[in-house]
Length: 89
Image 1 (cartoon, one colour):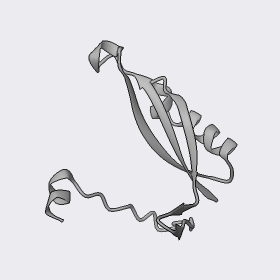
Image 2: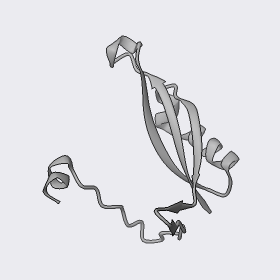
Image 3: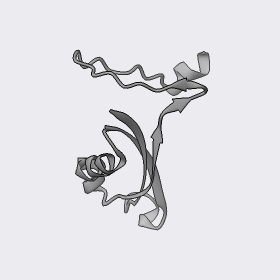
């Protein structure tokens, strides 16, 4: 299993009357880039906002460290640090 960052764009009528293109990144675990693309197309948020894919990046290393995905059977969630929490670090 590999980690992919899928950079998507979309136009949202609620933001600037839909004239500006907004972007978000989804992180997808998949066996290959075609599977990552397929998984992204199946996401409800992707379909609901009529998103399109601007690019896909396989993430195999970060700052000299190899990225390795391990199945999370306990469904432990990642820790998120809010704006205020981040400022205090």
